[in-house]
Image (cartoon, rainbow, N blue to C red; front, side, top):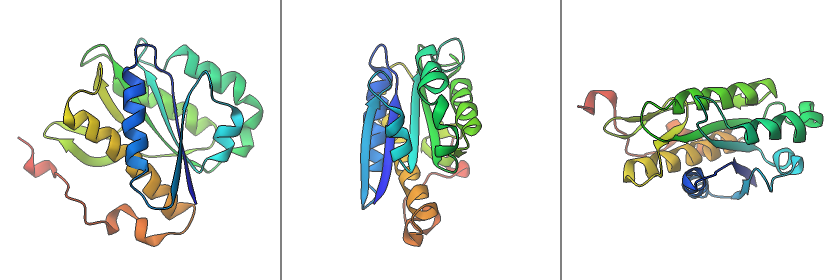
Length: 188
């Protein structure tokens, strides 16, 4: 069984909405169990349990929130070698475009790499101008269908990579899927 944890912090509810879409995407992969946890309710055992982890945080001055950073500094401190080799990705929302969401994703990915997670970006376009190279990002709530789809793509890709790399399910390799994808040449 593929085990995915969607761990997030959300003050306004925007990242919580993104987390729900990420979980929805992960649930598209057969034989996948998904847990969604707010960082205030999450435990180290949740992270140790999972094969794949999606971490979401609001963008706070271009980086992850202090609450999410504290979780990794304090709650996960003694779990250092217990999560090495798991697969992870990031997502973030800011108050406006240009608010640093991709930098926030990179700061999340940096924390995860320090714990030994294998992190990834996504080459797929979720809309005409929306990529997930560093993770799923949105301005405020994910109201636009392309923003929602970017979160679903991220969750699905996490579950696919985890199924393939951790469980050896070759049929779940993303390149083996017949999924319609927008290519850079199709973008205005």
